[in-house]
Length: 210
Image 1 (tube, rainbow, N blue to C red):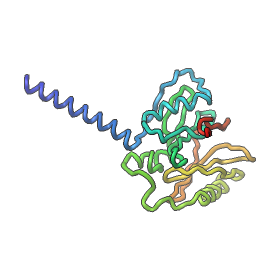
Image 2: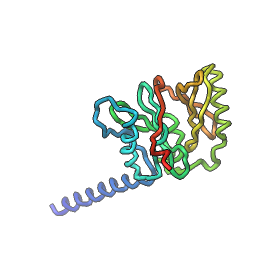
Image 3: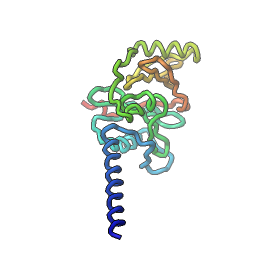
Image 4: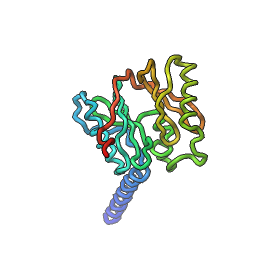
């Protein structure tokens, strides 16, 4: 019985240590939770409530350098850009459903993001060794060539730099309709096809303070 008790105690210690290391890894490397829901599931989340829901999600990272930036409302969900305070650069892209569930955006945000996406999870922090070859202007030109071929009439507009890639608004007749991303090292284009119809855009007033 004594041997069994010791074995159980050691097992508990190992499992507890693994959980602690997992928590530490999440805090150190910014590993993204797959989904978080802390909002009443009324299905009526308003644009004004989105920063609160995302703020609770970002508390998971325990990083005061991350703030809510641009918020875009689509028929399928809200798109939220999270920025770094010190650099002003895009950190990650999130989707918020009407019931308040917050999760990482699929695609470039998870596959190309070298700091906060899957690349970051594997231990890479920052740009690849070779940097990001494309400049913002080159990324926009790359996006425009893609649009001219596959969606004539759409225009590549505002460019936002993230770690390892750019996300660019697409415009039709002067109005934003969607977005796509361009991989910095390769120039690969990845349209965001999951948003639905664009409804509006905002940015938390707190980000303009001072």
